[in-house]
Image (cartoon, rainbow, N blue to C red; front, side, top):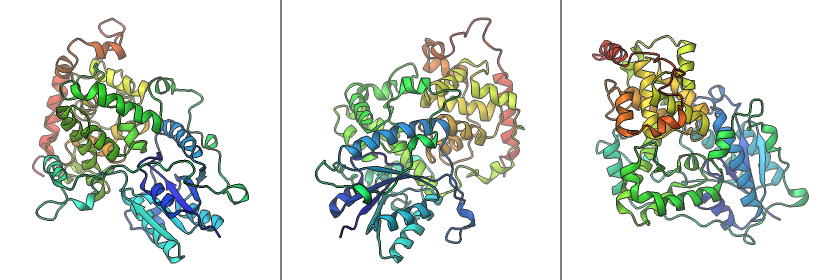
Length: 467
């Protein structure tokens, strides 16, 4: 009698280099693939979780748009191999238990996640399955270097990127990617044995009234095939100029891999080896360092689980933030601050679901330091509007800019938007693309004076400097 394997897809929406799917194929039994939408569980009231475990953070609007299309593409890739992607919603622990009973599965496989909520959830599910005599295994799939494998000479987690990256480069070379299972070598459950599935459309991930996703559709094609095509194009056309041009937002010089990695359409192992094998060694070293920054973010999230809600530097708990004025915050969100490069970045974000990394720093610094608004307000907006809104990178980068986190990014480093524009958009191409009314009477007046607001920011920092 068949003893199916359940493969639980999460932030790994691909079939190639998917260790959990690979293990299920190796086991040789029929495979049940499932994606679970769990946005309702509050684990803080559950005995198996620690007191400080946060609940599940729902996806932001832009990430849900991406998720819908990426899941559709994944379902197609699985279908081509004779497998079906089952959609279920509800508390993940209950859904997995129900699915295991329905299918009489003998094994459940998944790839690891690194936030506290996810780790404790996965551990409880694994223990429950093993108590019932079901094989339960998790795999390294979405990080090159798992957070507990790297530590300082004093046995502590890293708090500064450069020595962390040095340790990564000194570690064993990341494994090579695993192949996707081929059609004819895997089987799904068919007929009456197949589990029931919810309809992805009923999850209402796509906006309707209003439909604000037109710019996202024009900019992106989610899915594993598109991800591979994009990485291949970058390796051939963009990698050689990456180090020279990556800070200039008007140039098409970035890899566009961030949403692919966030949703797991590509694994970091595929990116690592694809880039390392490319011809431009100088560009490869520079780009892989950016991949290392993502690894560093997850290293921090693992060791400091409240990275997204609490200042890593306790002194910032006393920082005198301004009370959030809805009008001021709204002008920043809408790209109506009167500071051209800030407005260009915020409009790029709204239209495309991403923002050039250099401009992310400029817009974040403006909110935190020129407007004196709490970094968590900006983090929440980015979470809702970025297609690559990542639970580790988004929060770490906001704390980095605010100066409340780790690494060498002091609060008194205030990005001057005008100087940043002169240096990185010298011809104004990027600004004109997103703020066509700049330089005309139709453009809004600046919301703050850059010089005076910088002085206020430094004075506020002086209040907590000695703490």
